[in-house]
Amino acid sequence: MRFKIHSTLISILITTSLAGVLSITAAAIFSFSLLAKMVERMVALSVGIMLSTSLLHALPEAFESKADPHTLFACLLGGLLAFFLLEKFAILRHSHHHEGDGHHHEHGHDAHEAGKAGWMILVGDGMHNFTDGILIAAAFLANPQLGFVTAFAIIAHEIPQEIGDFIVLLNAGFSRTRAYLYNLACSMMGVLGGVLGYYTLEHANGMIPYVLVCASSGFIYIAVSDLMPQMQRRTTLKETIPQIILVTLGVLIVLFVTRNH
Image 1 (cartoon, rainbow, N blue to C red):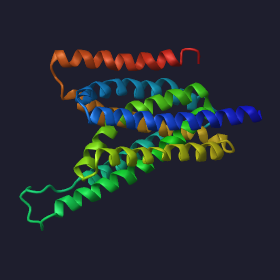
Image 2: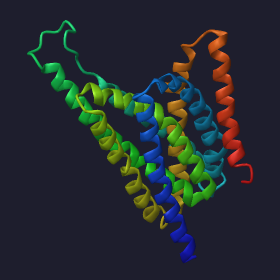
Image 3: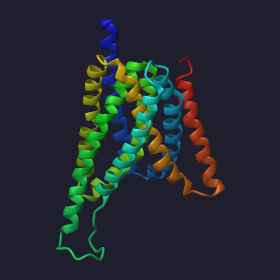
Image 4: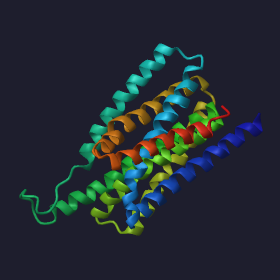
């Protein structure tokens, strides 16, 4: 039993570390090169991965536990509403003026505002990654297979988001190196969240189903309210067919990984 606990913690540490490094590095590569054109493809793939991870794996895992279904559904509703409010704050966080926007500000006002936006991005990312670490820990404690799938889903949806964050940081005056290193440092908050989640949830197994439901509410909300509307802007058949293929591929990837569960 002791070996199992240690091996689970090691898996959480490795997975949260890799999730942070891979998502930040991939986002940097896309942001700093012509590969940025592939971001739209990542969005469609993320939708398939996130929805199938939530609806076909994490939620069934939660509802198969001894937790009260009515309470779990209430948690799902609360999670969806909470993410709605978080998105509102994120929109406010990203709003800032630009030089020459027609508003009368003193010289340097917009550069100052952009700089503040850059630091706020980093603080927000750190908190977000910390939460992701807790979710990954909860998934591993419920089922190791679910832990890897959850981490994969997080990486998939983090890359497009981190690309947007890189753009804000560069606009705020950060060099490419500083933007990468600061983002990487924030991503390591996921490791801290994973460790805290492991030691907290290991002694409170009854909380794991609720954390899984909260994670699912986040995946569902992001996929339905953010990513899918982006896909709907592409209306031609030539643009729609690759989207359908990639969404299906995302679902198949999750089904393949979890086929023995």
